Every structure is written in C-alpha cells, then in structure tokens.
Image 1 (cartoon, rainbow, N blue to C red):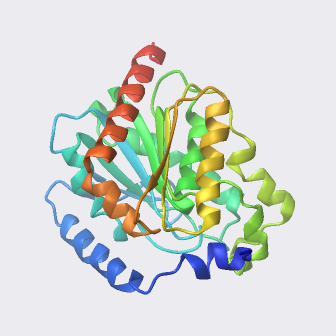
Image 2 (cartoon, one colour):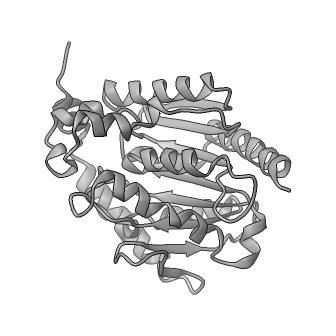
Length: 284
C-alpha cells in the first residue's frame, strides 16, 4: 500500500504512548541532572541554545560520546534525554548532550554550522578527555546531525573535536521527502537545499566506523533511510553496521539502546573496537 511523505514522517511515526514515555524520560533526566558531578548548560557558542551538559564516566573511561537530540531540527531539548547518561557512563563513556539553534530561527544550513563547535567543546570538557576517541551519536534529526558532524570532522588526523565513530538512531539522511510534509513549514527547505543537506548523497571514504540503527516498527521510510545510509557508507569503504531492532518504535528504541541487551552489546563492542583501532592508528 502506497503512503504519503506526510504519513511516513509525521502521522505514521506517532504512537499513543509517546506522551507518557516522554514524561518518564523527563523525570529520569531530572534525577540525573542532580548528580554532584553534572556539568550543565556549558556554553560552546554565543547563541542561547549553544549549550551542553556533561556527565563524567563512572568507569575507567574509553571514550567521549556527544549526543544530539531529536525534534526534526525544530523542537525538543537535551534536558529530556539526560537519562541516557547513566548507561553511557556505565560503559566507560563520558556523556555529553548538546542543544543547538532551531528552525525557523535559523536555516538548517546555519543550524549545522552552529552545532559544529560542540564537537571540540565536548571533547575538551576536561583536559584528560582529549586523549580519548570521540563518537558522535544522535536520534532522528540528531542522527542526521551526527552524520553531518562526522563528514566535517572525520578526516582530521588528531586533536580536539576529531570524530572517530558514529552511532545514528532513526536518522533522516535523505531530506527531499520532507519538502512534501508539514515539517517544511519551519524547515523551509527548497529541493536544492534538501539535496545539499542530505548526507546520503555525500558519503565519503573516511575509514570511519558507524552504526545505523532503527526500530523495526517504524514506518517504511525510516527503515529505507537507515538501510540506504548504511549501504552508501559501506560502499565508500567505511566499517558499517545496519541494525533493525525488533518490536521497537521511534522512541522505545532509545530504551533498547540504553538497556544493552546481548545483541546490542555485541554491536557496541564491535563499534568500539573499530573506534579504538582508528583512534590509535590515525593519532600522531
């Protein structure tokens, strides 16, 4: 049965349990924000939304993970997703969550420019973090931004803000269909701008490992986007994993990511082995 972009990216992605689930995320995030070691709303630029939160690892650290939140580039806030810090810290990751300016206050191109300094800021929260690999992760719009950040910083040889891996969750990498949805009222994308801002058309050889993850219960377009980005990334010679999580939708998928079930743990460990090897081989 054929469907419209409006269904695939808006109506079809909604679930009746989302409001209660997001409320749980907020409550858990508020609790995490009370940690004595939390560093909240650290500026990484002059805009009021160029702010990040950092939560140091509770285990021997093996990396820094910068997380970019969902919201179709026009809504939501890092404060809703701080709850993910506990699981990331338990894996030996310093967890950093960044806000960024939103559309239509800025164009999508300007938004991508604005979030770029968060890479170096996250990597340098503490001086000792600079010796660790940096992985950028993101959910939905954040998955797109994670890929954009990797395309910008994945070819750096060393130093603050270099990206050594991607974990993208339910991302959108081909923006052209969004021009036919109500989302474009705020994004204000032309077909040309959508093409220019689509990572799917700009994958390149970076020897940069990535995981592309989606919920198997999401719409067919989100499944296509995930598969196509994996294929494009792998075709450039980059290590790549395509993961479809059974029974997961757009937001329960975050709970699966956090839970670290045996299959998910294996995918994490594969990525981190590749990230660690890349970081060691490309640092001088």
